[in-house]
Length: 472
Image 1 (cartoon, rainbow, N blue to C red):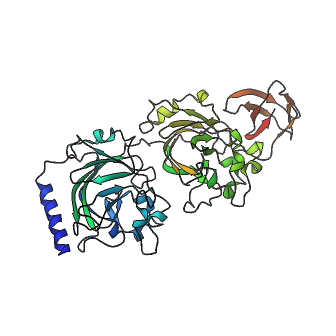
Image 2 (cartoon, one colour; image 1 turned 90 degrees about the vertical axis):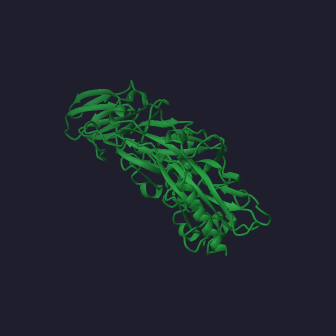
Image 3 (cartoon, one colour; image 1 turned 120 degrees about the vertical axis):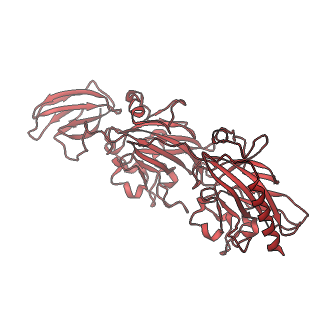
């Protein structure tokens, strides 16, 4: 009888949808009718004729079992419905994946292994807001993208038939971060009026992300960059999230794997204090943060870096009028390198676009690009400095001229505030400051001494395709 009741409800929904006006779907990922089960159907189907489960994916516009996703694709689950039981027509609710056993009922969505959604490592922080005055069928992608969801929460209670619910995907979602969408509640069917067992049928519009101009760039669509707690790669559930970013390789490294080649990492990301203030650093010891970045056996970055291996990446926060998504090669090339001068950005924020230039001692020396922070995710309940940034990079191809790859052996040596040429070498010696500006160019011969007593600070010496950092 229960199966017949569910089947008749499903047929009614299909017939109802066929007589509606045409739905605007251009610019959306759209599903006309998706059925999701309540919490009782986390690991078994609510309908014998269909695969209807409780865990909902916005990427695939379908439902999954707990066993399908636990420790496999937790980022692919965005939301779940919940039906209260025990009284006639008790409330139906919509929950995100974050929260707790109390706030979003995570412990009531079990798998076959005595684990529940509460044991997920990645819990997508989808945000919801019930809205009125919006026509689901007629809403355009531009209208949905423009919805202001700053006061949205991870819960809708109650959920009722014909509700229109706006939502925003989490930065960690496999569907893509910070995408706005609409859900229309088409039907709610309980097995009995007092039961918590039932199904919810919905229509969904998820606005497609803005296309990103990537032609000509060394492009990284999305990468997670951890704060100092990820330097050793030892955070449970985040074994592939590390904290040291390489401009040359466009990837992160754990400190254990890069400690003998530190000129190949250029950036650190940080969350400061109980307020989790977001910051971006180069590799110097600004604000004394380097001792916090440690290998898996507790060796600090500050003890591994030398003056010669500390890359001085420079940054510039771009104005809000600069569009990361539409920026072309010409737009990034037009950023004045003389303005990219900061060794840290503090604070920064989700949505910020930051220009950068690799320092002169980097394996990517002189390379320029921009990145956008799409999300910042805290991963620990009490340590507010532990988390990761979700970042996209657009990078210009490496320069084909200028300073070449660093070499360990040199044809010169520093003596106090001067440089002496050795090894029967003649040529042109050049001196650059930490943002790559040429401050000295001089023809020299063997045993000549170049007086640098008028200069103070950190400089890079280039001589016959050899580079090294000096301190004056």
